Length: 359
Image (cartoon, rainbow, N blue to C red):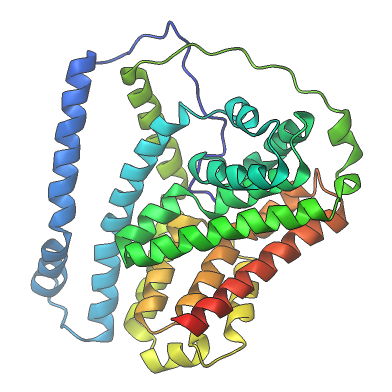
């Protein structure tokens, strides 16, 4: 499951809700000042870390322990600061995207066009794998084709804004762009294949019998209310995932400081043909999220792991977790669930092999 995204329904403010704190102008000014302070702190993380680790603590450069502690002390505030900024922005975006609006956007679309639109909407709509059951029921009840529904369910946890921005901040825009393109292609093609297999009879019968009630129409929200929702998301989501982030960074620090480059190249390098499927298989039982796995990805790439193998591992952790399988089993019969996992796993492995061959 992608825990970096909230598993609660997107909170919606009533139209007559009043901002509980400062006037709108003061809130905007405070937001600008906070962003300026964030930028100042973020730009000075490296010199502050070097002073703390090498000058104050007195660890030596180029030693296993020194490199490990430096990585951990630098990456923890860096990742948490990026995560806080992203989650706050996503909390504001959530006020514009609800499940009802997403279903409405996909209704009536031809399957091929619908697959593309569903993949794109999956990127910008912050729904996690634990939202899969109500979203799946809502999509089926609205008459959205099964393949289009799966394009959305693949893209939503896999190609999310947290993963993209953290990848951009930690390993560069090239890897982030590659991840966006391959993840979106996997969602579109995977959903299209499932649609061509015509497996509607392998959805649990009770899903077709269920009728969802209409949600009450929400009134427009002002900017102050949207800031409130961003702050709610910041508190709730970061509060849930910070432990995963620190665990992921600790693993990455150990890899960075103690694993020799030649060892990593032998295990996850281009020359090991079996590395891609093994990396994809290793990711399945791991219960993590984009924020927790990306520091590990950064360390793996820094130690010489091949890009395709590393992407296969990351995509598997995010898109093929066992908890997601357990959740989806509530609405999918075993054959369709196995088909879904098989297509996504096959796509991930193909992506890994392609990038190992090209880069």
